[in-house]
Amino acid sequence: MKEISYGCIVIVDDQFLIGCASKRKKLGWDIPKGRGNPGETPMKAAERELYEETNIKLDSPELVSGMSDLGQQLYYDKKDLYLYAVYLHYKPTDLKCNSYFGVGDATCPEILDYKWVTLEEAKDYVYPSLYKVLDRIKNQLIFRDRLKAGH
Image (cartoon, rainbow, N blue to C red; front, side, top):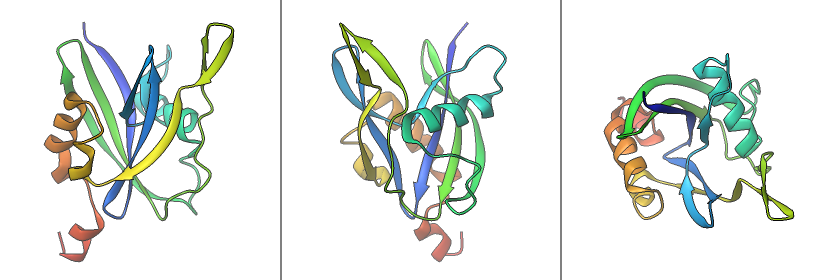
């Protein structure tokens, strides 16, 4: 059975949020996502991961303008992603990681830095398997330029 990670594509205007994740001695840019806990719904797991990795709370109407369920997406042979699109009114300035893991005798935040990128720019940052997912679902995402064009 495939593993599933639950996550959010956080969108403001025509950009979305990626974080520089510190994973097993290497760095990589990724969207906020992770494993679910026993008994968590996909929505609750994605909401928790979003908060842990960015400090964004979905119950903040002054920040969150809407969201949509993008469903389960093929990621690679051993893992799928269950994703939600989260639309924000503005880019938060208080992004921070609330989740840490041990590295020797010290702790390290899961996410070290944040960047707002367009879908085209993402190709230069995220893993190829994630870019394939983003490219495949791009027509389900609502970016500012599509709203102006009346789509």
